[in-house]
Structures are given as structure tokens and as C-alpha cells.
Image (cartoon, rainbow, N blue to C red; front, top):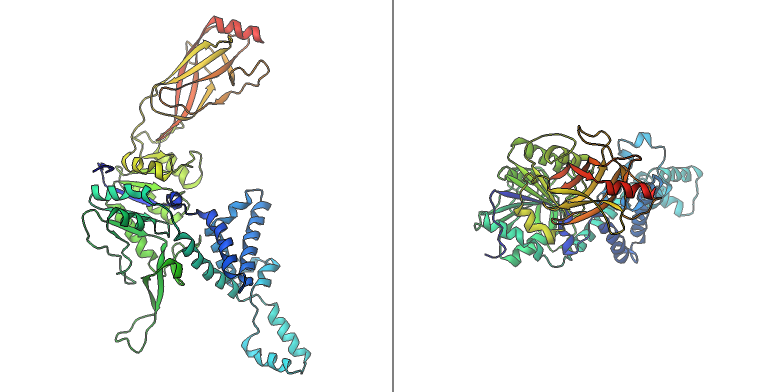
Length: 520
């Protein structure tokens, strides 16, 4: 069948927000921006206080980041915004409250400050025309107390309903079809997703592949079960909930014949009409014990146990609990591997990404010497999904770079690097101060070709990416009194399995020496 991925090992998949970008759905920062607009359109006429409170929260977070000298708009991560709103709901009870002398005045001015019910008669009495200064003082003291957080609770609920509406408006999802192909090829597929949207479900309908989230038959306190459908069914584990899941309280009543503790059940509904969405959103709420969160995490771990390779798509490794599952899974068996599909991947990233790079990939700085256990494909999901599902980590072939000394058409000395091996990126060349035996230190540094005699030479020089069969030139700056001979230069570059290095020999001829001396 055309498009089928040939699987040589069982694969599981983890989807992050980047996997839905090609369906034209916003990521974390873009979702907050969309929420600012949608909250205004929905509530400004009837509930302007909700709009004002949300604008205040966003502007305060932007200002705080800006005052720290970092990108202010990085504060608009939707997870952080929700966490801030939840903190404000119960700020008086927060463990840090004893150390906060005062919140920003607007925190209180937007919130509700109800007069205690025991003083309601005071309000009624005062409105009748009788004024007592002691009574007025009691009312004033009640108003000066911290607000009850109601405005932020209402804002939280309103935002969640708007999230459901915004994420239901996805575009074409055909780019996800390689997932259906793999499910058919390997007799089923476990896909865990951190997203709330319905892009995978829509793709499965188009591809005529059964998909089961396991949630409709879920009972609190029990593990999720997935239906035993056709051979190519896809088990979709929505770790943080779904925009079409509604949370319904289940309360003991007179009609119940057996006793139980108040709990909740989940049903499916239209996202545009979901008033109680079962989605877990916010940095501090990801491992809440309420709802199916823990059961979903257990199903994710169970699904991974059956796989030898995990393909991670569009996830920036920002959730500690997810990272812990990945770490434990890959460390438990040496044959397990990881493939990352991310167009914005950085090999210099901190945190858990750094741990992955240091432990699972090639590195010129040392580390494990076994075969690499992670590869990275720096493409968007639409362009690279099929490749990511197919291409497992393997050792990069030996360096196939060649360095040649020559004079260009203007008689400037050049070093030409030619790549006869696989594509490489972020190529850097460096001069070597301590030459090996039999080699001579000739090169002081490098400049851009034909930069002129006044150009500043750098010890290391960043070059272009170099595809297979490609060439790139760099102009060496030779040491005073340099002699012709053989010298070595260091190269550093990236392959799909990590950062690598090589040392190449260059034969500097007398013609280059003469030309370099004449130009000084």
C-alpha cells in the first residue's frame, strides 16, 4: 500500500503542541493571544470585569518578564497564565503568602470583597438611613481584607470554555496520515498526546482507522481499557484531557443502592458547547489526582513497555512528569531508542534536552561510546513525520570531509572543504595551536573570503551547512614568518545523531605563503 511505513521494531508516539501547528492551531503563546481576543468578544458587553481582569493578568506577567531583561512576551505561555490565575484564586492560602507583604493593588481591585454574611444586616440597616460609625468601620475592615478570588475562578472557567472553541477550529489533518499507516503496518499503535485538540481523531476518520481514547468506559479508581478493534486500531492517550470531554459530578443520592464517595465521570460533548471541559491546563496542575490524569499516565507507561522506539513530535520537553517517564523507560532497556521531530531543536538546549544530548547522542566532548540512541529530524511535522517514524538512530558514517589549500581567482589563499558524506549542519572550523608531531602551526585564524587585509581573524569560524557533494570556502590568516608545510585544522558539525568533530590535514603551499605575505 502506498505510503505505508515499514516498521522493523514496535514504535510508540508522543505528540506535543508542535504536532498540531500544521493544522493551523496555535501553540502556547499564540493561544494566549487568541484568548485575549476571544474573551473580549465574548464577555466585554455583559462582563467587562472579566475582560479587565484577564488583561491585567497578562500585562502584569509581561511587565514582570520585561523588568527581568528577558523577552516580555515569553510570559504569555498559556500554561503559566492559567497557573497565575489559579494562584490568585487562593492567594491568601498559598504557602508563600506569609512572605508577601502586599500584592499589586489591581489584584485586589478586580476581585470580589463581599461583606461577611453575619454583617448583612448591617448593610440593610445602613441603607435604611441609620448611620453608625462602628458599623461603617466594620464594613470598611471587611472591604480591606483580601478578595475571595471569585473573579479569578470565573475567569478560569471562562478561559477553559474559550480554549475548547479555539482548538476545535483545526484545518487539514492529512499530514498526520503516516500515523494511521504505521498503525496498520505494525498491528496497532499507541499515541500519547499532550494536546487537547481533535486532530488525530479527525485524521483517523479520514483514513478509516479505528481510534479509541479509552475514556468513555473509564471508571474512577480503575485502569483505562481499550477496545480490541481491528488489527490496525490506534489507541490515543490524551494525557492532559480533551476539548470534547466534559466532567460531570457524581454525587451519592437517594436513588443509589450502594454507597460511594462523591466523584466524577466523563462524557463526550461538542467542544463549542463544553461548559465543564475535562482538560488539565497550567504548570502546577499536570499531575492532579482528580479525574483520569493518573490513569492516563499509567496507560502511557504501559504502552511504552511494548515499544522499542519512541517518536517524539513537536514536544519541547518542558513537562517534568513526562520527562521522568521517558527517562525511566529508555534507561530500563539498552535497546530502546528515541527519535525527535522538531524544526526548532537546539543542540545547546539546557535542562532535560541537555541530558538527552549528553546521554544518548554523539558528542565531541566525550561521554558514552556505544551506538547513539537518539536521532533528531529538524523538520515540521508535515514534512518529516513519515521519515521520523521510519528512521531509527544509527551511528553516523565516518567523516567524509576533505580540506584543500588553493588560491582563488583573485590569488587569495583559501581552504576549500568538500563533503562527500551525508548532510551536515552548523559546520565550524578552528585553528590548532598545538600541532601533532610532523605538522606545523601555520594558520592564525580565519576570515570571510575576500574580506580584505583589515578584516579581523577569529580563531574559530562558523561556516554554512554543507549538504552531500557541497563545497564551502574560508580564507585562512597565516602566521607571520609562516612556512609552507602540512598543518591540521579542527572541524565541528552536527549530524542527525549529535555533534561530531574531525581533524583534517591541509597542505599549505609556498604560493599561498608568498601571496599572504604580500598582502600584509
